[in-house]
Length: 207
Image (cartoon, rainbow, N blue to C red; front, side, top):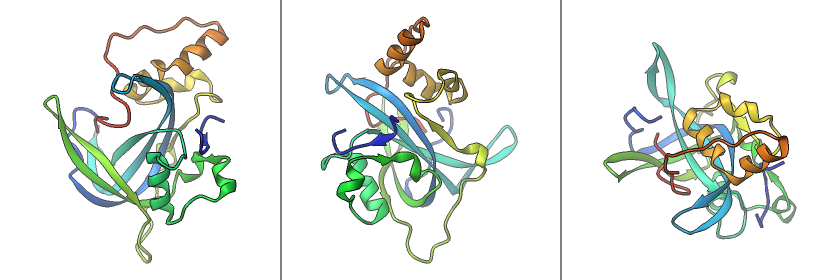
């Protein structure tokens, strides 16, 4: 499973205000092998998203919790951002056994605190997740607003048709990955061409 990580291993709205919030993980998306223009290399990437119940927005007449997300390299090595955030979220480091294979899908539905900062880039303001922390003892645990809101996608295991159920900008990013191209080739389908420039790795995701 591609969302088992090892040691080796929405635009148009105002951004979520900067601050620290109780949140809950609702999204885990395998983005496949992505090329970084900045670092001129490729790495397997994953997108983790959180709902913030205290911050809401009205979409099509329905009030929904605001969401934030962060893109990570799929690795638990000692210098990986993913490992650092998961350790601070769990309140403990990984055991040797966990480092051999930790299924990221297990954190979907789990509560935490997320720190949000603003970053301006190319005339746009982005709400970036700067840190993930354990929920303080005694604080009510937020839950995903609806089971239908949970998003889990594994590019190695799930049918490619499931990509069409994802938000468009996420689906497009997956389709730019070499992993997606390899699956298309293996399944005898034609690749999709894109002219839009890819977002840079691990930051500047519009939310």
